[in-house]
Length: 332
Image 1 (spheres, helix red, strand yellow):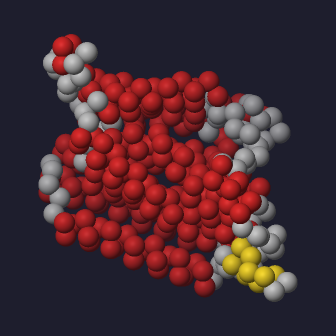
Image 2 (cartoon, helix red, strand yellow):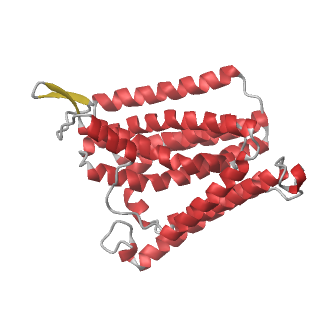
């Protein structure tokens, strides 16, 4: 699929405009969004994603539309797991409710920029070295095993990554929030506010999650434009999900197992593709290995089934065993 430069430009421009408007509106009137406000916005983002996918079907065919929907659902499901960490970050820094939406919005903008760089690097690596699929596939299988072993036993406290420890050690910070300001003056000195640290924590933490989500979506499509748009639609609806499904998220006790199965499936798919396209001299004499490849329709079906079963099983389990709810008194 050849995507004209103007399409890339329009996509990036529209995204930047929407994000800028969101930040300006929220920044001027920080508040905890109502359920109606969240539902309308989330419905709009989901509807836009569906329309985009159908438009892609009309313009480029069912194959690319299927790749978009599979990638979008995968990125969304992996992003849902991020939300639990976001909740821990907000709690760790005691972010007032009226400022949480702004922090999430700016953090998501940082995440989009960082993911865009990651997507470009991934595309360049794939175009130059076909063996990268082996690396991506092996990494996803390894991540799936680690995720299954953890079983969703996240700590109830947020631990800063190395970058965040460097930031907090390097910059003078106040413990007092000053509206939506990232910098303020205290005792005549320029200092960063807790909101500045929170936003950086949200953005950089998402990048760590992208280490598995970007290779995962490249296992479903080799089109950078589809990878980018799937990530944009997933991330732009993340803020609304944070407020809407906070309680539901804690009930998804099998989410880690479902995501582990999803990552393992895509990892195996990547390895099969790598074997099919093989040019490594020490594998089958540098010749392609005649292995079956998983069609995108099968991938899309598997993703829907895995996520559906995971959600239903989790809700049923927590209904019969309320003490298993994540982050509750019976946290396991």
